[in-house]
Length: 407
Ligand code: ATP
Ligand code: MG
Image 1 (cartoon, protein in one colour):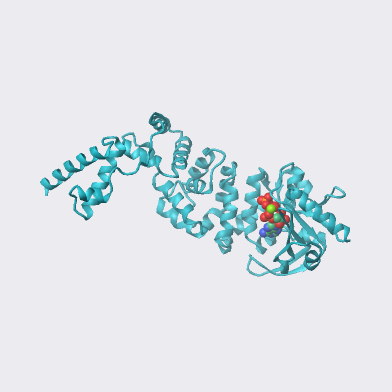
Image 2: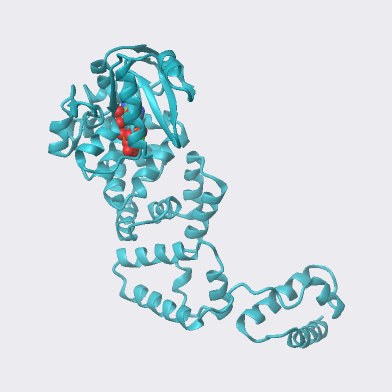
């Protein structure tokens, strides 16, 4: 059973019991656009207690705010009581919700295209906010006065840019101007919520347009103080050259491509990314240019290839060189690819032929020089200079002789 079927089944049952029940928000927008919706949300005049009584399996996630999750077979559907939100004191959380009518529920939503309902039983669209007209015009417009609506919840500024990017819609001029005037306030929103909207914007293939809006409105500078400046155009150009499907860390590295690694890592802290994502970005930025080294040894190349983020590093470098229209840079990368192809399916991260115990058995002393020896031996192994334990043993004896004679 699909999420859509589950939602319709729930609506049918609610209507059978005399309640008003409708599909709401993003799924209506996507249906009217002929896009597949991520999930189907239900809005109803039934109160949370009614919903929990009518359906056998429910999760009481936000009953206080009128939201109950109904489980139907393998699907979860959000069923929300029509509500209005009032008293946004901090630009983040409503201090009060009131259960109301469908029309009022529509008017608390963010953008006109997100403010429509659809009755799947009568197949009718309920549009109190001129959402259909704006869908036709392909614009993102706040419901009501943009200044007020952004003042209630600053996150909506980033959401406007995310929807504009994902749908390829323009942001209506007054709405866009209001983002520019209020951008600095975004700093009051939690890093996790900012990160989620940035991710939605930057992972979309239309990411260059999204980044350009983030920069032009001042939101980029507000989230990452010190970001704005000469390097912003490079960020947009490099994002524009990335292949269609890429992960968030690669797009963030591209976004910060005009800045030093330390600066970028410091700025990304606000996003509260996972350790893994942070490491990923740091690897990409700190190895910028590394693949262009035409004197790269075989061992260095294998070490790059053994990195889990190697493909992303290559993609970032390709996009940087493409954005700069650098013939030599791109030619270097083509050479590199040829070199990698010629390696065939060689093991780029073989087990060391000898371990620490082996080295000490051969006469190496514990201490820093042991680490040095192990490192040099491993490089020799990657270079193909030693291929067996015996050869490695000989190589170590020579190394020890050389190093003793110089001490
Ligand atoms: P997506 O397809 O990306 O999930 P969506 O439109 O479904 O887009 P959600 O964040 O899932 O967006 O929110 C569902 C609906 O709830 C929106 O369509 C909108 O009507 C309303 N909504 C969500 N966040 C806000 C907000 N910050 N302010 C006002 N309304 C909001
Ligand atoms: Mg949604």
